[in-house]
Image 1 (cartoon, rainbow, N blue to C red):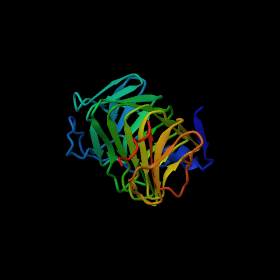
Image 2 (image 1 turned 60 degrees about the horizontal axis):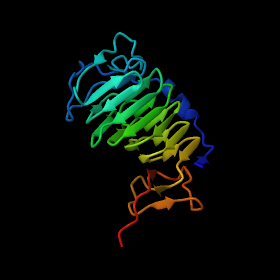
Image 3 (image 1 turned 120 degrees about the vertical axis):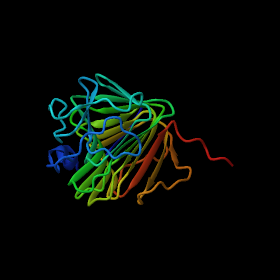
Image 4 (image 1 turned 60 degrees about the vertical axis):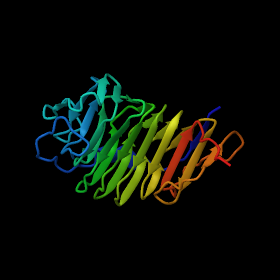
Amino acid sequence: MRKKHKQLLAVALAAAVMLIPHAAAASAAPHIGADASYEEPYGLIFDAATGKLHLNISNSDDPADPANLEYTGQTGKWSGAPGVLRLDGFVWDTRGEKALTVANGTVAIELSAGSVNRLASLCASAPLTYGLGNLGGAIVVSGEGELNVTGGPAVFSSYGAVTNSGIILDGGTLRLKAGESAVSRGFAGPYITVNKGVLSAAGDTTAMELQWLDLPDVYTYWASPDNADPGGAGITYVNGGVPFTVSPNYKFVKIQSPPAPPAAK
C-alpha cells in the first residue's frame, strides 16, 4: 500500500496566485526560433486542448487571445498534441514573469531520453513569477530526461511551479526552484505524487507548500533547512522505516524512486 503523507498546510495563496495582477508584457517583437543564449521577452502558453504553444504577448494566459501568436520555433526540440507536450532539449529563458502556463486541462509532459530541458523566468519587476503553472488540470511528467523549472526574482512571490491541481511524476528528473523573493517556494499547490523518477524542490521560504504528498512504498529522500542539496546518501524509506514528512522548515527536498543505490563501501 502506498504511503500518503498529509500535511494540512495553507494553500490559499497557491489557489489564488493566478488572480494576482501582473506587470505589463514587454513590447519587444517575438523572437521565433529561440536558442539557449537568448532571453525571450514573453512567456509561453501550452493549450492542452489543441497541443499548440502560444507566446503570452498579452499576458492574459489565454491561447485564444488573438494577440498571443502561435509559437513554432525550436523545431525538433518540442512537439505537441492534445494533452501532450514532448520536450527534447527545449530551452525557454524569458524576461516574462511566467515561463510556461498550461491552459485548458491536464498536460502530460514527456521528456525524451537524455534530454535536458529548461523553463525559466528571469523577471525581477513583476509581483509574481513562476517557471511552470497551470490553470486547471494536473501536470504529469514522464520519460527519461530532465526538466529544470525556475521562477524569477519577483517583487513579492516566486515559485518554481504553482498549480491549482497538482504534479504527478511518472519518470525523469524534475527540478523546481524558486527565485529570491519575499515569498519563495519551490512548489505550491494541492498535491504532488511521485511514482517514479527524481523530484526536487527548493525555495528560500520553503521547498513545498501543499495539502498532501503521495509517495511509493520504497524511496530515498533528502531534506535540508538550507536552500541547497545536502548531498550524501539520503534516507531510504521502506515499510517500517522513517518516512519523509513535509515541513515548512525544509527549504530543499529531493525524493527519488526507485531508491538511490547503497553507497559504496
